[in-house]
Image (tube, rainbow, N blue to C red):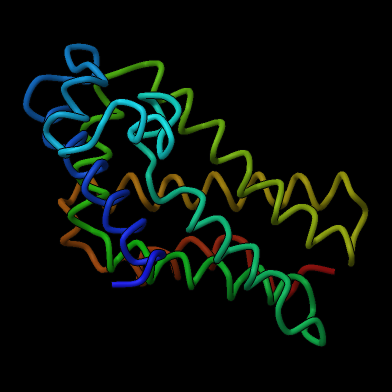
Length: 187
């Protein structure tokens, strides 16, 4: 096993331990020491991977955001709005592939106001990435408003999907949402 693979395996083991305890006992009732013990790592190792307990609820955020930003940066020959559309569709696929994890995550977040706020803070990063890309083709304020609208639509799509226990086809929900704001017709 390579160093990167071991690191990823440790990160996943810690996140899984945290989710197991959060779902069983609730976010507030679980300590970092208990998570470290269940994951079979030291407290120091746990904090190296996840500096706060809140970070444990969003273990895939940085990876997903990085992939999203990468798609936004790719294919510079395409209009920015189409790159945003491609990035959103890629996010949909990633969410479908992680449906079980996202259901658990939604359950944990929904029970705790601090986690709802943390999720909104992370959502702002997605919107900022879209706005930055869109601002190449339209005034900054318009790009920010469009990115905010798209972010809101994606939150609504994910909420509807999670509420259905991921039984509704996420790609169809995303297509319906995108039809509300036709990116191809944006000036």
